[in-house]
Length: 323
Image (cartoon, rainbow, N blue to C red; front, side, top):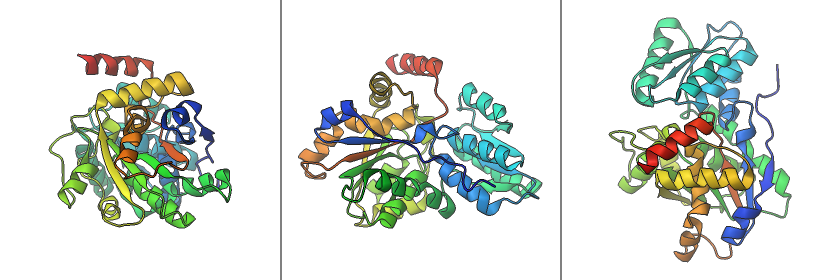
């Protein structure tokens, strides 16, 4: 069996972004994973720990990326995969999941509905449940990207801050764990969401985990109505400091387009939320407010990727958000 399913992804310097913020920006290119996003780190790790060759199969509820990772890993392990997606998932995602050999079920309007169906299938069909973001094994898997960054930067360089997108909070938990493992707990994390898919920001503001009434953002892959408890708990700790910020869908879309022009890479809107922190001037604002250091050490941007985007999808989004 493969040691693991994920790749050690490139760490690239972005000249365009570095110029914008006046310090070096490094991009951790998780979009180049076999499944298209960082999710394969945690999901590969979890499946290796929890799935046996005798397994009746895995089931994962997903707006796209977790499902793609679960389908890819299941295919490599030779076990069946059932992916339950909400009706808000693009047709493109459904097709890509089928191309990986997965059985796709469309249930409900948002991820929470799809998840209820996945849990039902665990009970009725004896499938192994693969949670998309809320499990210690997932965070352990996602944490693996930070030692890779440390190895690439070398022993004398440490990030000034880390920039991540937050959906359900799995990536955030992984990054926190990775920073702890690397002894980088003094490195602040800027956690980005889009308005309308902001379950983490809402929890931070309320001082407790809250459930959003609905997902109104177009960044459907950030679309969990409730952030995982662990991510909220981390937000209450002093180390590492987590700064929670929001951008609009329009700002995230603009970031996706600028990134495509400058870096020649297409990522989805959910990933654009993190990129927008640089392109919209938010990093500068945080420096002016004294919440990030001036001058800032190297900024590490986790380019989380995304399998639910192509040019047609991008054009549709543009029309939708401009109307």
